[in-house]
Amino acid sequence: MVDLKKLQKEIYQNKVDKGFNVTDVNKEFCLTYGEVAEAYEAWRKKKEDLGEEIADIAIYLLGLSEILGIDLEDEIQKKVYKNSKREYQIIDGVNTRVKEFDGEFER
Image (tube, rainbow, N blue to C red; front, side, top):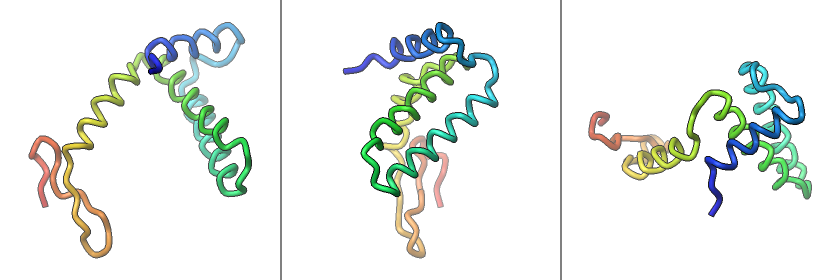
């Protein structure tokens, strides 16, 4: 299993070592968005580098998380748990959340 906390720090250190941006958060969000677009284009055109493009997205997310001081591994685990407790129903042909994990949200 990959240690995302360690990987997050390694990715950040690589950015520092190679002289990449570690201060301009707006730029990092834009670059991450660009990587998502590249992955979509690779999927749409059935290119062989789709996996590499998806890896680029993950690398940018981990680097951005380290810049912002967010423990992405912990946040992912919490969100996966939260999503597992949500309930959905098909309403007018749309899969719609009808119950939030803590019981606060009901339609």
